[in-house]
Length: 111
Length: 114
Image 1 (spheres, chains in turn orange, yellow):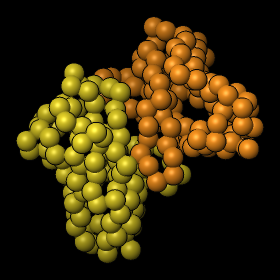
Image 2 (cartoon, rainbow over the protein chains, first blue to last red):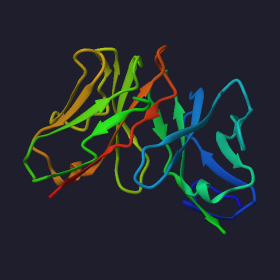
Image 3 (cartoon, rainbow over the protein chains, first blue to last red):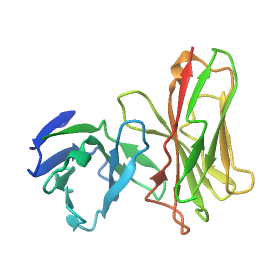
Image 4 (cartoon, each protein chain N blue to C red):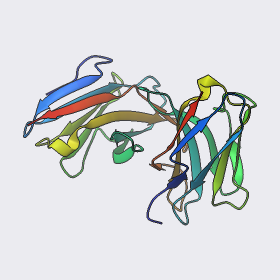
């Protein structure tokens, strides 16, 4: 499943499929980006980050892609599991401490 | 502890009441942040500490909001004369001993002003 456009707040994906969550960021001066996962009643959990001198970074079952030309960030989750159901936020930083968060995408995994 | 700890988890305040929200960061973390998260939205930056110094408080919505970290570890966010629009989840985060990002968040305090 894939979320498209500037703001599609929900994504429904079949268990076992790959998920792609998209994010358009606003500030061309942003040089650091983080993806967070937030489950209901919990705080945001760090997933993966990327600096602006990179265009791709891989973690465990996750990959972040950065396209600075169009100010676009995506998070790919391989073999989506029920435990991946959550709200996913992209966050950008223009300095070494302040994060600006997007609106978030709610991912629901269908069994 | 292993993570950022916030207390209380839930707080109900009557309009006009003062509240104090506590944050225990990860041991040894230099940087500490407060964010406000309204229902259905992403967190919004409130303020930033490096050790005991408050380096940025530009996100505090009004002078009713005050944050402190007097000994460079535990932090308190105080809201005076609470109003209904203050209802939100208040998130505290800290970052690694070198400071800066990424920030690791606590579970938050859900404040409801009635």
